[in-house]
Image (tube, rainbow, N blue to C red; front, side, top):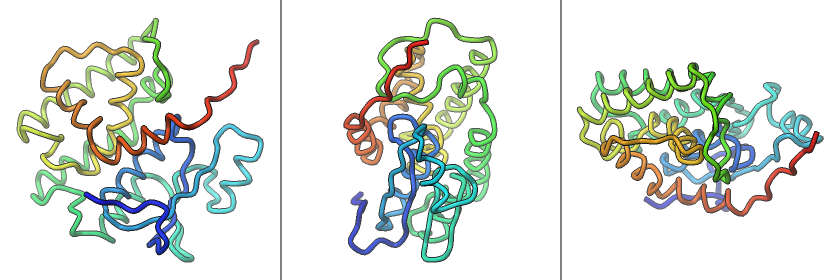
Length: 223
């Protein structure tokens, strides 16, 4: 699938944070890519003295991602994903079958609202190469929950993605795939390993990763 970032005739602007660290930006960005609509990407460096002021130019929420289309401003990754689904129905960002679509929405919604231990213990860092030394019990439970969710969906769809073709649910779990990889979480199930590879091979994910690798790393603070 061809996609258009930094297009001369963007359909909307998408404000995102660092590609290395901003998992919520990655989710919205992947959905935007999958929509097939041309868009302009606006990058804001996070954890900088000017971050809040830069984000305030686009939204009062104080967070990224943000979709801006003329005077219309949509914030929050799930709201952005649903809006893009309405803008580009031909992209089939949700599964066509009503029951499967409802289940895929449940998956994305749980990712959106849950897994607080995972977010804390395994924060997104696409440049990380060291395995995690300690996992909390809560994080282990959430990892097992995610793997079970993936297995349940893949047993029915038979891949290549959770519900067949790449959809919003896959975009929402894509950062988790890299959390597992970058923190050295051992995955033994061949079906799950293949799914993780399929996510890594997705054209949008590869583009995002290539640009993340070009970003400057955050300075290390010694205390």
